Each structure stands twice: as C-alpha cells, then as structure tokens.
Image (cartoon, helix red, strand yellow):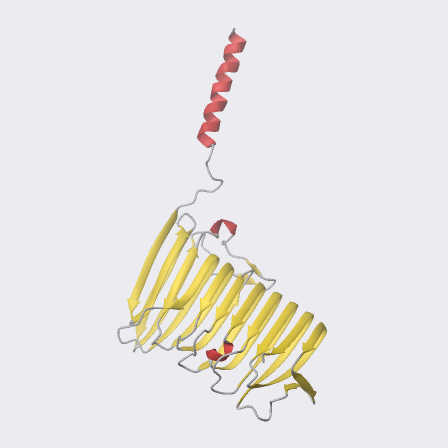
Length: 301
C-alpha cells in the first residue's frame, strides 16, 4: 500500500507540474501598441530616420498639416519604441522605430543579407506604420531587417532617400510624382525580394542600387521631368529593368556569368541604347554590373 501511495503522490505531483507549465511560452511576450503624431507647425524641412528589424513596415503619406504620424506594435519584454524629435531653425530631425532592451541599438545588417540584431522570428508580430508629411521637403533614411515592407512614397516631397534592407520582402512605389527634386535614391538590398514601381515619379538626379542575393525588379515608368544617371550592382540573383517607351536609355554593362537580354535596345560603342535615344526628351544613363544570375531589360510598348 505504501508503494501504491508513493506512486499516487508522484503521479499527482507530475500532474500539477504539467498543469503549471502547460501553455507557458518558451519566452514571455508582452505586446503593446503606441500611437504618436506631430503637426508640421512651421517646419520647413525634415530629416527622418526609420529603423525596423522584423515584422511589417508600412510607409505612406500623412494627413495634410501633419509632420508625421506613427503606430507601433511591439513586444515590450524585448523592445522599446524609438520616437525622438528635435527642432532647430525651422528644420526637424525625427527618429522612429524600435530599440532592443539588450543594449543593441538600431538594426544591424550584414550584407550576406541577414539582419544580425536582436530582431528574430519571435518579433514578426511587430508592426510599424508611418505617415510622412505631404508638404514638408524630407530627407528619408530607412534601415530594415527581416521585415515585410510596403513603402508608398508617391506624392511625398523627398529630397534624398536611402533604403537599406536585410532578408526582406520590399515593395517600393512612387504612385504619384515627387513635388520636389530628389538628389539621389540609394537602395542597398541583402538577401531580398525587391520590387520598385514608378521610379520615374521619384524625380531623382541619380539612382544607386546594390543587390546582394535575390530578385530585383526596377520599373522606371512615371513622369520624367529631367535627365538622370545611376549605377546598379547585383551579386547573385535576377535583375529586371523596365523602361517606358518615351524615355531614352543608355546601358553600360559589365557581367561575369550573368545572362543578358536586351529587348528593345541596340548595341552601340560602349553599351546599349534604346532606338529612340536621339529623339527622346528625357534620358537615363545606367552602369549595370552583375556577377551571377540574369539581367532582363524591357521597353514597354
């Protein structure tokens, strides 16, 4: 009887332990949400820096009169939101994103395409939605890790844009023309899927794209108001370039083991040109460098 009682006691103890631990996550999470906004209130220019490691990032235009608005969903057991604002002589410096509680600041990306900060798959429930002023000229910098990014920059008065991504899925779109002139559009993508649409609406003077491993599609359609130049470097992956039929395009390419398809182009000394190069009102000159993969160029009818 004593043996049976001991077994019964041990069985009850085991049942209690299972009941206490059942359903307990491997790492406790404490999800919170935060909204913040600020009026433009005489601001003439802005410098905006957004850092986001993992989850879903959405960027769009704010309401008229607002300098910015943001909504953040985050795990408070591991991160704290970043929302800083400084004003000086009519200019504003804005920082938005998440900061790790383990002491690591910002998003740390190695260019094998991996985000090396503290943002891992447990953070994929995080989200950051930001609206930027449709009226205030803005320099915009984004550092994005393992995130799904939907960036609608159409109609925003952007004077400079830098986008750095890690192992991400990024959709960048300029659905409406930039009311300002952009000095440079810089994109550095790691192990990424990147698609950019309406780049003609960005109104940049120069574009620079560095792709690591992945699929990159750049669509240069839009309202071209000036000539532009740029460079595109790809490591391993596929690169697709799409151009509107009224834009004169010149390509100077360097490839190692990358296939090359230049539909709609003719070969000239030093590279390739669209057949309308001499008659086009606007021109784009690109240096294209690829190591492994494929390059496809298309001129839309």
